Length: 392
Image 1: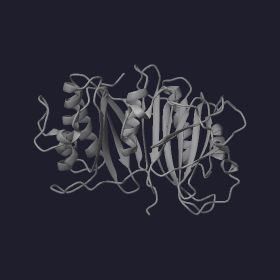
Image 2: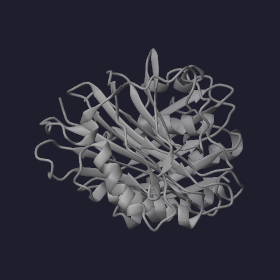
Image 3: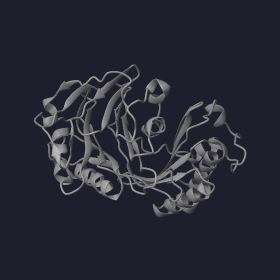
Image 4: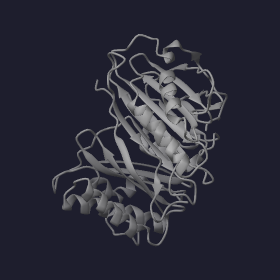
């Protein structure tokens, strides 16, 4: 069984439904692809796919938005786009992906061609509610088929409050490879995303089950020889550039810290946020080999373990990391195959219900995050959501 893989996300830009969106997104995609080293042919394929997706949004979707960003591994770079809309949805996704099927007014290549141009592609559509689509593009020779790309166990989305160009929410993920407490970890992270020129502007379907208090979160437990996944979500206090600086400081501290458990990681982040606005922060450690999740949070960050037939809330204590952080408590819950850990800021309401998004757990973390943002995101605050899933 292969160990977990994470991918860095950077240069996040949103493009909102507008007459200029397809051309703006196409130009940005071509520039981004060339800048990270994709050749001219591959860059033109990226631009074509992005333009088709953006035109589809503009002509046929409600409140459509397209996110464009760079993906990085230690030795590769790629481009990803994610589209989110609020309807009308696609009644027959398989038919829409068939050869020769395109929507009137688009470039005519169709979603099937977009999927073939991409190295990794996923789409989840809910008729009457909306569609989320994600596509990744990595270097490949002309005429070659999809490479599949690296399969990351985590992905997330951040979106600024309407009217702002910087986001006070940020997330990061890193892999603890096991071994001594001082061992270095591979990491993946994203800063709060800025809107492009044309930019778009829960837990509680049942009682939370907090799990049990765990001494493992204190860092006093014995080191594990098995890989684990560490994830952080920070909601900087307020919004705008100062909130974004606090969130970036939290992500930087998380990535630089050698701590491997939630409580010492939160202490490191607390120290790094002194002198900033501070924020709400939650840190989780997923240990697949031990079948458990350790979670510690301060402030208004929501966490949930979502399974095919279960939903368990993860509790955070009151406070502000960087200013007023009370004694920490780490909770432990079982990690079940086929499930996902979801963490989000209060830019998403807590009232979402997975039953309203049938098939959600069958999709990639990026598409899951997009559906949650569509279902529960609010425009009066920065929004951030990160999803970790995988049977590794």
